[in-house]
Image (cartoon, rainbow, N blue to C red; front, side, top):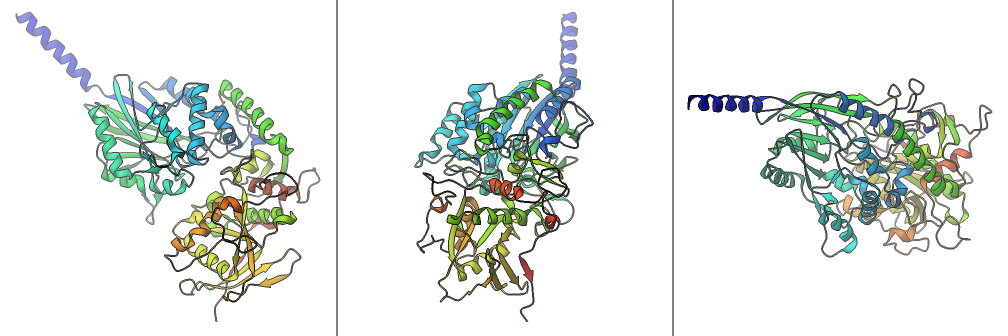
Length: 600
């Protein structure tokens, strides 16, 4: 009897010691990679299989090597996660609905769980369904999460996506059991990300805090040891040098979350942000870093140990098999997209010896890239007699890439204006044109002058006009003078009076022009702008405003911003005699269209 008691006592002590033994978990994380399979920088310089020979960063072959190395050397459990916007940003995205290439590739690289961000909806819910469905046919996927999607019972456009939820192909939560640890995952689409997901309709997204509380409870009932939120919501710098935003609020208001993997705002956190004891991490954008978070599970409690960012640069020899698959996909992109347009994937079309930037988190007014894009659109549209415009504009939020010094290829230039699709087989939002009166043009400029201060992505760059402003003017009284610069150089002053019935053509992509129709809402009913066709008839559907760039061909030949950029670049002079056009040096500094003057 005594021997039995001793044996039981020894077993109890062993169990107690085992329960107390801390478990080490390493979480590797990315966010906002935007299909940057081939690195960040001019593609002609990217050489992931050799080291110390280029200045590019990122690239999936290098990321795969880092993940493989971490898994090899970590003594505890390793998880690999992505916080959304893994798609949309390069030419690769256009083939995803049919080839389903990237998600199986991410699984092969080592990703366990990914969440859907706003840009996964860029082609609409039906195309997102096609992307995920074609991906699952191609191979095994990471767990794909979208925790707060709300489907419409009356509108069938989201039925197919809802079907993927019913089949479990996309989930609201997921559980992974590894090394004796039960990990629970859920995801959220943030409020701002929801507003940015213009083409997600009719899908809506429930409030983050209430949804998070419910999903945490669900995972707690399942007995999860660690609960991780993949939140495509984000954090932003505050005025005091710290951080604020939707994910800090999430950490403050929802109990039971152990880690928040953040995305959407492209914030680069060199060290995790600890809020209410919860580590919040975010790794910048475009795969230039892989985040590494180390936590400890001990006696049922999760403790933060360490965290940092791993630079993904040319010091890392990329994984050969991953790169081979990407090169094959490049060939398909070249065949399906570029060759029909008379272009080749790796051929240089222009070069620059200076950086061109448009950063909505930085100095939007000091951008040199924004005016360049607006000028390119203006020149492109006015080159075609059927589509002459008075004013062209582009918003900061749709300019997705810098132009980094060096030789530029078509894929490099596409990344600058990579959003959206039209009704043809060429990627990119179509260019559209509406007509407004002089009074309405002034109203548009007045509202645009205000709207960007709360949402920098709404800051607009213009071409074809010169505007005089008085920053001290009252509400909707800051625009003093507007001049339209005609193609022959003639300058026409715009009459703002109601009696002026002259119509002025305004061109932008169809996505941006949607905002003109909601200016009444943006101005709280003070201003109403009615987009019209050239004959003055109201345009209610922006699809009817899409410009036909060649009326001699059947159907509508859509114009694209990235094609406008390429055409504009090819019109520039070859300064150094190497047969490749050089970007005009006048764009070293911002080209201004708005000038501050005193009303006195």
